Image (cartoon, rainbow, N blue to C red):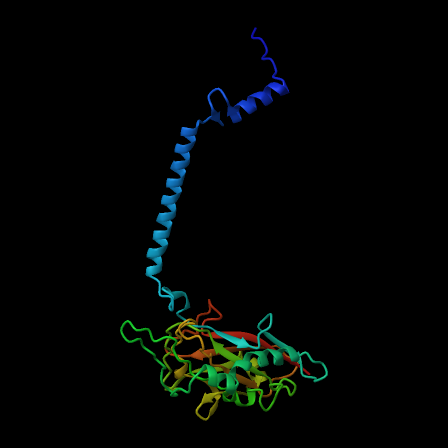
Length: 301
């Protein structure tokens, strides 16, 4: 029968551990002498230095292919969507028109915040007057970058009855609220107007989701509009193309204001606004925000 291994005492274990840390007979630290430690440290220094050099070289090569002013790939944003202002936590505009109720104040404050950058004094500093009806193309000259690119002014007064100048509550207390529609920015995108509607702008129209809802929603006015057609909103071609935040840092995004003149009270109106252009798809039912936006409007009396 094999004899049982004698259990080591605590003192013996501590002595073996100390000898492993430093062995005075062989002059080894943790099982390696000075030469072995020097070689292994040298190996890791060279190894990680090589990895760092490879990573740095890869990053440098990649950065040479990137334009700091334009994204290399933008295919996911080829078809712009729409968004509304004021926008709180949801795409719902629900309020009580009673001035004492005050539920409309958040929407008014939201519009004031958005439109503060559209005052004449701000626009005079940030933008320049542009020729209406034509693209504001600003090409580079050979290797000379044309940066920063100019930005066309969009004055608050273009929104007329929805500018907040004459009516500081934007129609919310009178039951004729204004909603601002904006097209999402897509770098270098040139929308093509629908010639049957306008030759100089892309257009925006809103409607209820079905005939009954449309009749309950009532008439609407748009600012700015196509010519004398107050029933069709207009975004002039001079605000295109957008060159990106770095190349065109003072760019002012245009709005179309929709004023709901006589929407039926105490009813949830499902409103759909669409932008029309030859190269914008607003018929894709799989993407509810492609070329359009859907929101709820309810005015409680």
